Amino acid sequence: MNSKSASTKPIVFAGPSLFGAPRSLLNCIDLRAPVRRGDLSNLIESEVVGTALLVDGLFGTSLAVTGTECRDLISKGWLVAGSSSMGALRAAELYSLGMIGFGDVYQMLRLGIITSDAELAVPYDPHTYEELGFSLVQVRAAIGELPAEDVSPAEQQILFEAARSCYWMERTRWSLESAWKRALRQMQTPSGHPKRRDALYALRCITARSWLSIS
Image 1 (cartoon, rainbow, N blue to C red):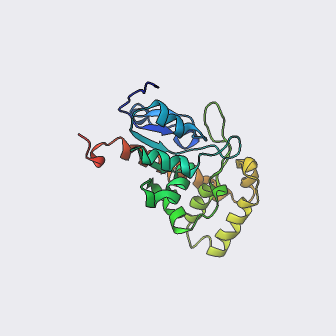
Image 2 (spheres, rainbow, N blue to C red; image 1 turned 120 degrees about the horizontal axis):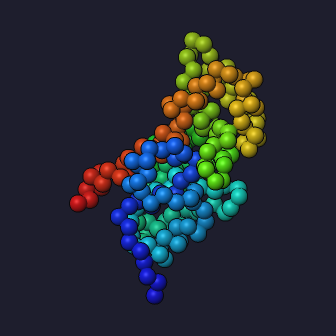
Image 3 (cartoon, rainbow, N blue to C red; image 1 turned 135 degrees about the vertical axis):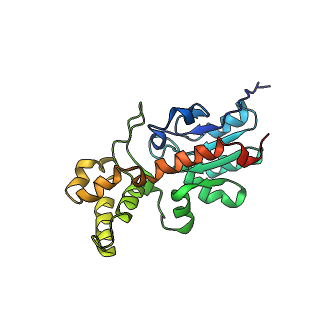
């Protein structure tokens, strides 16, 4: 029989969406690398029942975590939540089965504003998790915050499509800068990064304990 380890900290699978997160929050969690296929099955085998938050996950470089794995973890009594990126995708798919979703990206997936997981993909440094470019959901947020009197809805769509035309691995500052410098500046602000904002919101919720009525 496999011995299982016990931890009172929520297990969080994250990478670029939590880059630069406050140390005070990171100290409250068991932080692990972006989730990939097999990670949740390993939790069932090696960990006692607890809380798992999926934030970032691998899309192309490794097999992605599946909805079946999330369902299996829920069926074993785990509290499973998601936000920001891969976690938001799976939470939007499995909300009816009890997976909890946090944040704007999750809501946009539920509402059908985001219809493709390609909107969440972003290149990042595999060692530091620093983002090396921009995801389309971040581009969408930045364009949406431009003053309506300066940029019409039609112009916003043009800007978004210009960004969409960039290959996601090459959607860098330099590839976007000539198209819309003003929107790029907006993306540098915290309000222009919904994935990171959602990840911090999710962390604050799952580490608050009182929201689950845990004694």
